[in-house]
Amino acid sequence: MKIILILCKSSYRKNNLNNFSKILFLNKYLLFTLSGPFYYVGLFLKSLNIFRIISIDGNPIVYKDKGFNFWLSGTTTKIPEKYLHYKNNFLNMKAVFHNKDKIFQLYPIINKKNKISKETRIIYLSSCNLRQPNITLRFINLYEEFLNKNLTLLDTHTFWNNKNLQEQNEKNKFYIYRDLKLNQRVKIIKFLMNKYSNNIDIFGDDWSEHIQNFNKTNFTNKKIREIYNGNICLDLGSSTGSITLYPRSIEIIENGGLLLQLKQADSKSIFKENENYFTFSNKEELDKKIEELINNKFLLCNRIRLLQDIFRNSRSLIEKQLDKIIIG
Image (cartoon, rainbow, N blue to C red; front, side):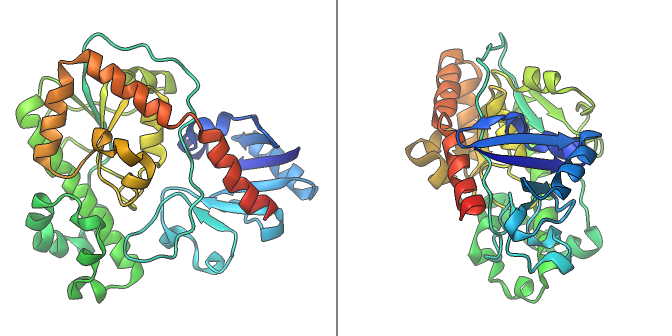
């Protein structure tokens, strides 16, 4: 049995790993996640050179024969330039304007049974304020109307083949993508608030400029489970790339929520014949699916069970990836 140490200095980043950080046995692997004060114990154990290491956000940097660096919540633009050439860099997010991102795909690990709440709520948890408006505002003004009509346009190669965008460097493309996504979130939520204001709960610390009723996000993991469990959990995709399974969507599935997600570049490969149950491509489709579920608890429960059944084999899928990376 191979022992793998997951070194994660930040407790926040450990939470991003969701149930993956709680796995102990994974068939041929024994995993220990060391964060907070235990991170420094992990550094000592790493120095013994007898364990394989998964280093979260490259802290510390790990060389190929010792394990891999796992960069969370970003594409290759997140990796410091001096480490970009490392062959053992893996990410959990994929850009749509290049093919440089090597993915270590995390999957939902289903551990708990669901207790369905009495009243169905629409849940949305995210940030929304623009990060680089000095660079991105002119692109928002230029493309906002097109993206409002076609919510998935931003995740297509056609969009990024536009001359205005091709002229931008990789970092600026990332900033533009992120802020266009954040702006799109606001537009979609405002659309839903017009019809479902009494049924929707918005969580996020920066929504005050856009809507009146929202909730702060200073709550525990137990509270997160209560919020998601048995509810329609809206996911408008990561602001950093297009991939179905990333920390937020995995968190929803693991905590018994029904994922209703803006279609991502890999939606079909993840959900296969069930894609239509858990994704949408436009506002009208989103509205129709919410309307179908909001007052039909039986249908909602069946969809949640189906969603969790899709990921019953997650441990095996993660193990196969580790085999390729660790064993080679």
